[in-house]
Image (cartoon, rainbow, N blue to C red; front, top):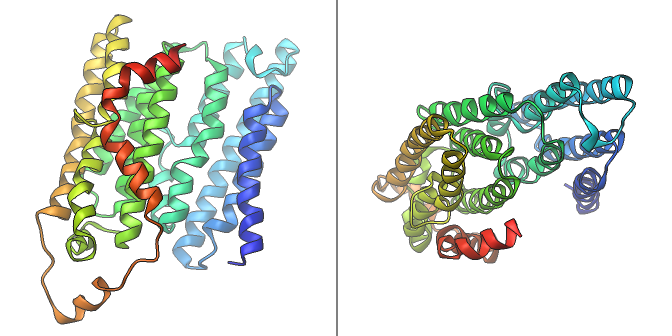
Length: 348
């Protein structure tokens, strides 16, 4: 892609998210979301592969449906209450419609079906943008909305954690596994949103760091399915030894960074008297943990057969920058001891 066009598209992505962040009016927020969608579509379809075009079409249709629902709900709210302010959603009907529209935008279960299919059709770089940056603008709106319907949020959260764990069990494609991982993590964030927005933000930040590391590892190894992970020993032995730690951090095992948000969420849910919800969420994390362990096993404990035809591509040096990967990997593995400092910063 032409670097000027790429720069314009990335600028459009940044501007769309910034407009949504800064807006207090529903029309401006909607405009930011639309700019976001329109800016990523050429990035998704840049390879002109039928699978990429299919993924782009699916993405465009779901995002257009979500944006139309959002606009309709905000107009309904203005008609019912005379308010266009984002934080003035008092009527339960537009509030529920907007929550569902934003859930469709970020891919919360049961409105998740588009996400694994779309992510599977993209290359790893665009997939990374879709899994991280594209979640920010809708999430900013959900955080401002503070929906009145608390049962809806808990149902969305629990369904997402369960489907995110269940859906990834039988997958062999890494991008689909990461899509289900994303659904499960978003479920955890939505679960705690109404009780502690600061913990939701902390979970979102740790999710972004961990997902960034995982995508960069797969990109460095040029891996798109479980079988190709076995060739990573020959490409980057040190990174291959660290990758299980990144994956287990995504799964939420102590003493890694990913344990911090899960620990705080379960603690907060127990404080709110929602012990059954906390138990179900913790059990659903075991499902996700299974497929992260499966990836770790495929990457570190299996070695690809040394056929001569397969040897050559292993030895080609990678052109990818390793500083971002090194930084995000260190943060993915080592941030748990800083939990008191991080929670003090966020909660204050």
